[in-house]
Length: 183
Length: 71
Image (cartoon, rainbow over all chains, first blue to last red; front, side, top):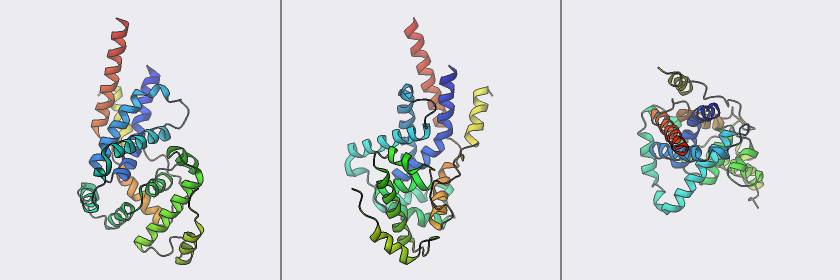
């Protein structure tokens, strides 16, 4: 009973992160919450497979991501929103008004390939290590690193951010050349 | 308010920002900051009640089925 209760409690603390990750994957607040709901049901059903003491956040992110891509495959391309609809849905969220910078950033994120966007979110916002992100995405650590690097470069280009900290135009172009495609 | 409800309220509004440390990512760069702002915009919202209700329902369903197994 107490183990049960702890699982529930832990689950609740991670829901805000799941919602944020789901929003970045789906590009829609409504679909994000539906995805989180499905994730919670799945996680509950397979809670016996979770090993206490291991990273529950990574475990849940993996379930959510699998669920998302399973749905994508089932529905085919129909789930790929037209850019405009995507952006409109996001703009409709009450919390979003007055965040012009954030809107621009959101649009820039939307323009990234799915694999680069998710790598950027996992590393730059969700607080995962490269190793954890690689495990969640079932790919090599080097692949995650190169996706993050390409995503940052692309975002900087789209937003016209010059010198993102240590990123000058020169280092951006040398990075493009320097990043080998993941084997 | 039951203990569990009180606990939930705390969880809903509380410490969801545990992972402030960034993992090897320039958090102070322009992109790093915007990325966090984008993410926290959703991640800082309280947990919607629908999810708490869902977990309650799952909990109850499980308890009920265990009871049935015993009978």
